Length: 78
Image (cartoon, rainbow, N blue to C red; front, side, top):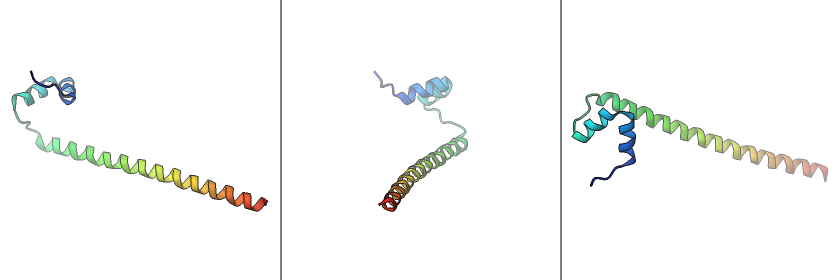
């Protein structure tokens, strides 16, 4: 009995013929395109991560600025 992986299910649902070829051990003929697609996805992943980090840093800086403003206004009242 062979193990069915979630990636196998995804590959099968995306393209049954490609899944079958891979199971038969037949190599893909478009390796350059596959490599380019992999690089594109990795670059996009890095951009998404950088964007998330920038957003988090922005929220932290905004929170610090609000705390400083509240402290300043509080000291002006006293």
